[in-house]
Image 1 (cartoon, rainbow, N blue to C red):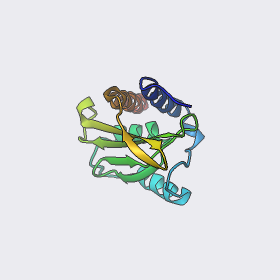
Image 2: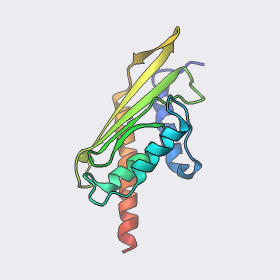
Image 3: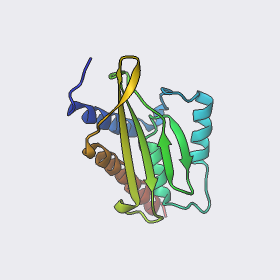
Length: 158
């Protein structure tokens, strides 16, 4: 099954939004990482960090928004989240990877930088493909929206 270029970002964004809504459903273990390595990475990412070097709301929102993708590298003090490649069941010949950088301790839109990478299967291997620039912006917006929700929930409980 093939998808048009305009439909792939919509599919990715739909997957991200569905994952936000289904946060409690767990992760799909698609990728090179083993389940044990993924569990270890998630535990390290969600462990409390008393003097986190980045904004904790942005950090938690990023993890929740990308929870359907296997994690490859997490650094709560440097504000780096790198996912492993993720391929959905609907488009097994395409896979995506995300890098999220949290650049500040303040909850601000310019404190977040997201990069999305795409590869398509051709022949026996994977080749890099272009990603619509709006895709990264939409994921950033989903993270920022979730971070604001977390902040509001915290302020309301005080």
